[in-house]
Length: 137
Image (cartoon, rainbow, N blue to C red):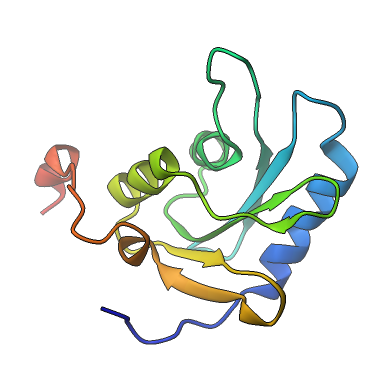
């Protein structure tokens, strides 16, 4: 099931790439993420690698966006250090992003195949934890 193509937010990719290039130095921080809030602001974050399972850049981004009042997020992208380019979110991040922002768009792909897709497409037939959203209806 493929939904309509979403435009790719190149400014968001550039923001994540800049953070990956300038802030991801060493083993503790190897990934950067950028998200665009509904009001247009861009929020960035880096992962906090730790052998016990530190949070991915996308999860840190969700917390940073909340702390800055930049909710909800509309689009997210992650970029690896050492010029690795766009890196797709792991399964845990896909599930968390779907739970927090069911309408979120995620930028994935590489080279000429960069595309923006609904987070639900990254987790087909997924479980949706919506208990926290019941009061919002």
